[in-house]
Length: 369
Image (cartoon, rainbow, N blue to C red; front, top):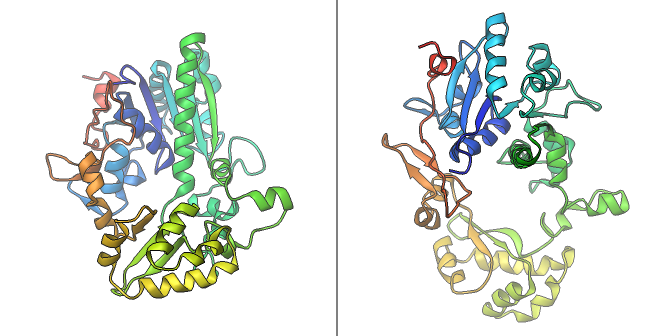
């Protein structure tokens, strides 16, 4: 596997850091997950659960080794520093300054291990206006304006279904770690990576920030191309109370559908987003409400357009494409897992679909046997 021989010390909790280190573990890195005594990573207790631990934790903890250390004790800090001194990568998600107070900040670890790639993920970064302030995903979606772009039919911000700030910051951190490891092959030196969840999500607004950058104004959300102003980027009801989406605004897709429906003259209204598309929206809404979802899925499948059903999560997990590509894996205990998304032809991942029990590897990792 691509990362075999890489040792990672993981001090992160919840989602951003564990999302990163799970990807490293899936591709062969030895990931040592350091947890506090007592309840361990809070992710272990996020319900629902089946068998060993919560589904949340098994998705974020698989293939890792769990070591319990009390970082408030001198021995715990000494053990952690020893692990960091021998590691290739250290990932932490404390508030800024906490790792240094424990004696395992970047400067201390680098002095003993110049090759360490040390990644800190925090809400607002290690300096700046809010370095000590706590925040989780929803607050960051609000602060970056993402929530102001995600409006319900009542015009009020709607809570998104995914914690996007957590996910994109984890992916940025992953790319930073891999870049630093690649560079280390030439220099022999590691580096310090400072990833701000706030900045990672803000940078993800690149395709919607045009009016703010160019005109210093907030867009009229309901008239933008991806947030309500396009008949071909929209959710429609069907006769059985289900929904489908159209999600392709290229004119070829627009002409294909409207032509098949006998309304080719409407295509010219869809060349750019805005209120002028309302007649097309109304027509499509009326049309799709006439028959059930299954009918429309079969019919739309005969056309070259972008569309999809609004699936429930169980329906999504059972999707035929995911099944054919082996994306949903069942372990020997009958539990479902996601396979790694990155697929190498040579040296494919060999994930271990098993999460560690709390402290299961403490003695092994610290050489106490």
